[in-house]
Image 1: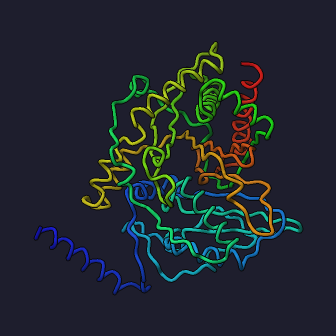
Image 2 (image 1 turned 90 degrees about the vertical axis):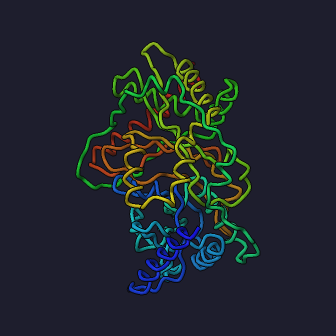
Image 3 (image 1 turned 120 degrees about the vertical axis):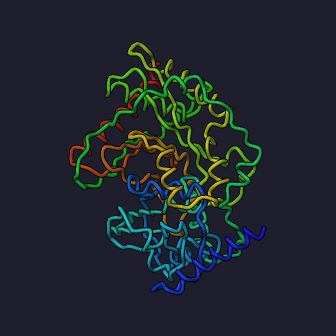
Amino acid sequence: MKRKQTKEKLKNKINNFYLNHSNCKYRAITNCECLDFVVASQRQKIYPFIYCHMEITGHIDISRLKTAIQLTTYSVPEILYTYHFKRGQFIDIGLTVDDTILLGDNLFWWDLSKKPQLQINICRQEQQDIVVIGISHILTDGEGFLQYLYLLSHLYNKQHSNLTLYNHRKLDLVLKNIHIQKQTEQTRCGKRKTVPALRNFSKDAYYFCLTSKISNSDFTLLHAKTQKNNVTLNDVFITAYARVIAKLKNMNTVIIPCPADLRRFSGITGKLTIANMTGIYRRITIEIRPQHSFGETLSQVHIEMELQKSRYRCFAGIPLLNDIFHKIPRPLLEQAIKATYGLFPVSYTNIGRIDHQKLIFHDCRVTDCYITGTYRLPPDFQLSISTFQNICTLNCSLIGQPKDHETGQYILDRVRNELLEWITND
């Protein structure tokens, strides 16, 4: 106990020295959690952003928006903080709501160590606004971002805060009573398989945000067929993506990592959790022969996903990381994370449904909305999927050369075609 108190005193002295000798007077500090740190540690390869793209008929009231952002800080103060990468802390340096709003600029990248964790770009047109909301992935994940958007929307409309929402950031409730079981046979068999890149390496720095959409009527048919086959939409999306990769690269085995919202495995649902609570099924191994139909591949994917879910494989390594997070020096831990959490050049994320009844702005109408991941450096590629008003958007956000526009759009359209063909043919 005495040794622990001594270590705590030393830590406080170091913090006080840093604060006293800094150019900025820090007013508040929030320590990051272990999954925040995992995301931050990968910043050299994947700088941590999530974006929401919206088309809004009418014009958003910037004054009301600023008030709403300010009101959200009662529950999520870190929105206006910077992030100190070396110390693993969100720090208040006196930034204000005015630092979060951009008018007419393209929102691609900003420095999280100098600017807020939230940036909103509004491009005003004659009859509508194009709005891009970017948030730090160090602060939150996809589900947490949706929660923040709904909170922002609610406060934009109400313009007062009688909400007493406490934001839960710690993983303790999520990890409670979780028993992780062994890997699946399919995962073990696919351990030596590599994941090839879908595009070439380049030093060009063009930014592309590409989409391919599935209409309301087609998505209704897709959803109905998914239910009829007793599988999930996530199974179907992964199947289509894997089949496209297999054909593009002439492969018989495809490996795709699949994120999972850890909140769904716990009793934490219904609470505000603007935080990183996403685990990952690290290797979904899919065997695809030329003669296999979509349905045969889908059956295999569904079985594998159900096995990994029942064995809580998306939690693998997280309880240990959570236990040692505050016990190991951050530089050493960062190196261990980079070695353990290897990033694949091919990735996938399904944000799910964006609730149009919760994303409403007074005197405006949101006509289109989708969520994207960060812009991927070459040769990495990520397929992102979200739905809004029963319209499904397939997306990839890329940095690269002009040819990457063609490559990215081709992949998105091929995935879409796989899905539509399954509706009518399989």
